[in-house]
Structures are given as C-alpha cells and as structure tokens.
Amino acid sequence: MVNTREVASFIDDTIVKEEERYNEVVKEVIKRLVENDLYVKPEMCVWEVREIEFLGVMIEPERIKIKEEKMKVLETD
Figure 1: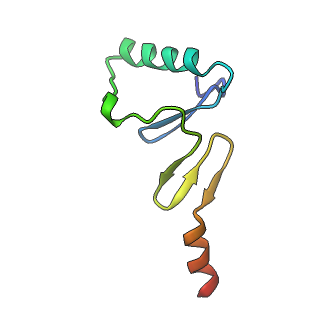
Figure 2: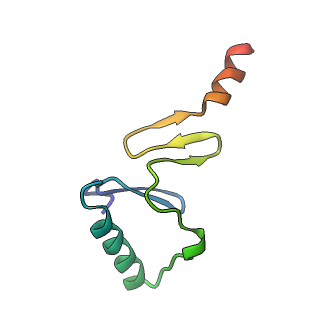
Figure 3: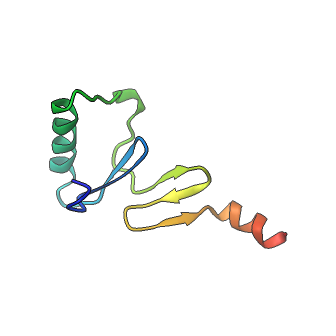
C-alpha cells in the first residue's frame, strides 16, 4: 500500500494518506498485518492524525520538516 501511495510508513508508524477513504484504508492495513502474522496494540494507536514526531522531526504524508523549536536552536548558533 506504500507503493500505491495510500499510506506512508516510517519504522513502526503508518499514516493513511487517503482522507476520503480513511476507514477503508485502515481496515485494509489491519487486514494485511493480520495476514502476515503482525499485530498492533490498540492502546498504542492514535487515529486520524496527519503527522507524527520522530527524533525531533515531524513526518507528514507528503513531507518531513524540522520542528519549530529545533529551528530556533539552529538559528541562534
């Protein structure tokens, strides 16, 4: 599904890029995980989020950007 650009994945995070078909794509992702003996912990899931943070950067479906606080540190050096 990454190849078709429906989702973006990074390490153990997945962002659904298809807003119009969000629920359908989430069901398909979970179905494929189960088919491959993989799982998710529901308590670790955050639904309907358009960005995730990883190592001080924000990862969005179409781009990666440095957090604002990190930019301020770079500007003062």
